Length: 322
View (cartoon, rainbow, N blue to C red):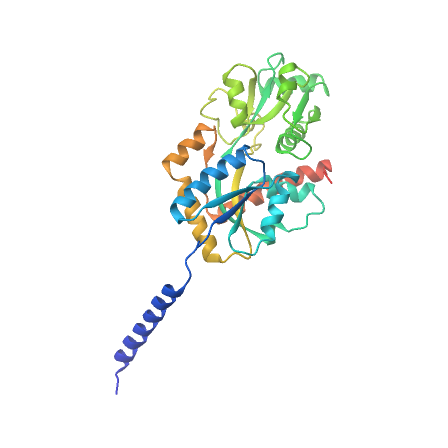
């Protein structure tokens, strides 16, 4: 009769054999190209960064990562397309605002970003710079606020539209400082009007603001990041003037909730490694942005933190775009 030790050894061997067999028969992923739907047009920053990360993933996983631009509705069209995908080979590259602002300002989304999609990986982040034209009197955020208090409703701040970060962060600033300034929304970039003096300030992403600052075409008044930007060590953060006021714009990759967890984990590991790759870090920094490698749990926490802040502003100001 077999001893207990012999039976235990036989069971372990049987389980090991079954596990090895399962590994041998489990299909590899990916076995065909992966579709990356980007929420903005070709040539825009989200498209550029999506291609950087897609190229890396293709090299590591042996299949093409095909960029499919689907701009429209502030990233909602792309998010909706991925939310409805069930092929296991479609992911979303989008800016964080598709998850942190859009659910608040769009009242009739046909998808639930919290239920229909899952976080995969963060890629990069950048702060925004409050810039003013050379003719603007104030040369710092503190001086701007003093001017706004002395002459309420005389300073204008342009934005990329109602509900955009460049709008909501300035509304946050006005609430915290009890100041009155005029919001001027634009459908396209307001930089030409800023340089011409038609508007006084605009909160511009670092990637597009810095070349103007370096060329001396605009003045940098404040930076929205948690710390001063190394390229602008003399420009204070918003939080130095208004404690607690900081916000970064960031990009990420999401997958439909129907995607197998093992595939999501594989994608996360691949894109996390990309954010740690020296060549990719160099390319991101050359675009005045920061590589951002976070865990999936940290990514979800970032969405919640930004959503709470933006949602509070949207509700207080009753901002809607539909």
